[in-house]
Image (cartoon, rainbow, N blue to C red):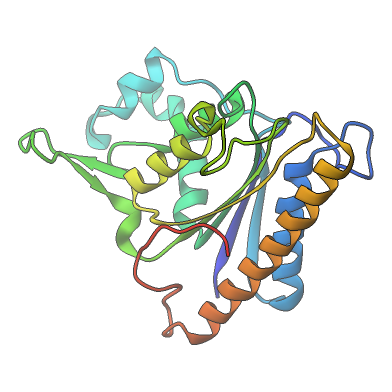
Length: 242
């Protein structure tokens, strides 16, 4: 049974269309996970609202502890890594990572960057072998196929592939880089645009994103039905939502 880790990174606590200044990315992540669990009630999910409860930023103590072999860590080092261990273990346990995230100032919210800094860990999600300077990194989450679903909301229009503002979008490209670095290669992307424009532009984008999400859900559920026992997904590839 696949396990889902759902992250919401929006600073807006509510849902667009239901709450004043609600979040479109939360709508998408909630739609995906709630529909999945309604169709597969025996599957499990972990929810973490990093938008409302941001992880701590990494510190000098965190860096010193993280790069010290576990057997050599002092008690204060173990304490410095408590939150990081919890966040990384949640990710390691997941077969499907669902990230609901807005585009803030051309990139990701600080809360999501803090989460990334906590989970990219030597010996936890990536191995580093300095004796091989030509290829020192081994992604540890490549041990089994995992999926990541990136559900984005943008205020402007044209930030997607082929759009006029694509070069200014440093959210999804950065996320894909990090996910690939730790071994998550099957990445699906769906975005809502035009929140600042509103009207028919936003409504049309929301409707399109919902159709894409439903199609992606159907695709991933079908993949689960045909997956070998104990294995979720196919060979690792990166592609966008249908």
